[in-house]
Each structure stands twice: as C-alpha cells, then as structure tokens.
Image (cartoon, rainbow, N blue to C red; front, top):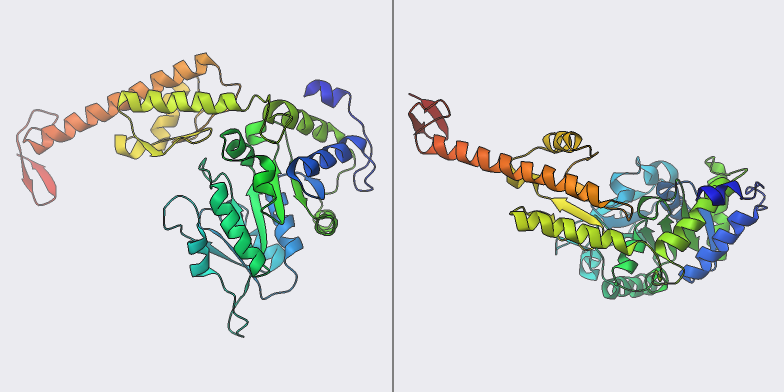
Length: 360
C-alpha cells in the first residue's frame, strides 16, 4: 500500500480528473455488476449519501434492523440529512431480518396519517453474522414489486463472500445501492465505495460535494484502497487469491480454543468476529480489557474482530488472557458457593434471609 501511495496520481476528483480514483471506481462498479461507483471517505458517508440520493421529499421512512449502523451509529444522519423517519425492526429469529419481518413493519399506505416506507436498508454482515442470499433475494423481489429502493450497508460484505455465502455480484445485484468499506477487514487506511446506477451515482456525487466530501488529491487513499481490494479480498467476485480468508480461519481457531476451555459464545463465529460471553463468566469488559493489557494486547470488550495479519504470538497471548478469565469465573463461583453453603470468605458462618446474606 505504501508503494502504491508513493507512485499514485495527484489529480482532482471534484472535476473527475484523477485516473487512480476513476480506475478504482470503474473496477468496483464492474466487480459488483453496477453501472457506476463513487469513492467516499467512510462507510457512514456512503450510507448517508445513498439514503439522501434515494429519498426525495418527506414524508418518507427507512426500514432497517434495529441494530443497524444507519440507525445506531451514524449520529442520526438520516434525520438531519433526509428528514426521514427510521424504523428499526427486531428480527423474529434473533439473527437477521426476513421478508416476514419486513412485511409486518413496512408502510405501503398512502393514508395522510402515514409515513410511507421509501427505502429498506439491510446490513451484511451484521455483527459478523451473515444474512443468507436466499433471504436477501426474497426481500429484493418484494421491494421491486412495491417500488421501494433497497440499500445494502455492505461494509463487511467481503466477509460474507469469503465465507462462501455467495459471490459479490450475487449479493450486490439484489440492491439499488451498496456501500462497501475498504478499511476494517480489508485494511486500507481510509475510505469506502458507493455503487449503483449512473443517475443515482451522479446525484450522490452532488450530495457528497454539498457536505464537504469532495477530494482534491484522492490518489493517496484510492491507491491504497485498490491494493486492499486486489490483495486482501482478491481479484475475482468470490475473493479468489485474497488474504481475507485467513482471518476467518484464525477466528474459528480462537472460538474453538475458547469453547474447548469451557467458555461460551454470545453468537456463532461465521466470519471474522468472535463474541466472548463475558457476562456468563462474571467478568466485566473493563476487566477483560485490563487482562489484555497485561498480555500486551489492545482489547475493546467481548467482541473480537480478527484481521489477516494477526500473529501466532498474539493468539497465544490471547489464550493466556482467556485462561485468566475462566480462572476468575471459577474463583468467583467458588466464593459464591461458599456463601450459599453458610461460610463466607472470612470463614464465618452465615444465614440466608430472603435474597440477602448476612454474616453471623
């Protein structure tokens, strides 16, 4: 990536003059089987440009998973940029939205009291969990039938593809627009891409300029993004020859290591995320972060996101931290049992009254 940056072009993207950026956008449009693409600085920008370009005049609403990035982690952008109501839907299966979930919450009415659904926004992967291609296609057909735009927050769609859930165009052609991230799993320093139809991307480029997203010398970041796609994801629609698959293999090993020790997972490990159930161990996230520091690791909590450059030494350090977590669970469990059985940690007898335990 550093070599690509050193040898990049330094022309203007506001006037669509930079060949490195134009090449990246053309490549991603072709890779996703869409007409056009637009480089943006972040996944949030990509999502918000998509919603603003799809939505025209209120009243209008966006339907999405209640945990989705566009609802929970983008500073209320849909409200401030689009004047849109965003409705979060809880999936009945507890994992991903289905067409039945959508049908229960969608607003198709033109009643004067209603706020009609104009966009359905899906996210894949969501928390490392894959939305199956079959369900994506069902929702896509329903959206087309009712003239509703379908957007994909595909910041981590690369992971679903590498996991074997379907090719990149299998997923992306289900949608009117898709945002894909170059950082996160692919490891570029900055940036995402927004793909869609030519008229849609023209409008998105206009909106990007209006919110200060135009770039004068974008080659220094788009050159790195191209390396991220070609080398980390791979050069084909299924991620052929890419390095990303190793992150999944390491994540599976870590998940297996944890469960073999007796730990529990909050979610199954389908891609590159491992969700440790720290609450079941009676260990707080702050304690887990501190245990990581003691092993020279920077942990952020119970969600571990693995990238392909994680070393064997780091995995071994993590093993030691996880062993300490389970030791703490055992110690705390033994302490609680002692109190329950009538002996506190000071060796004093106790009696239990209601829900509280008093020393005697």
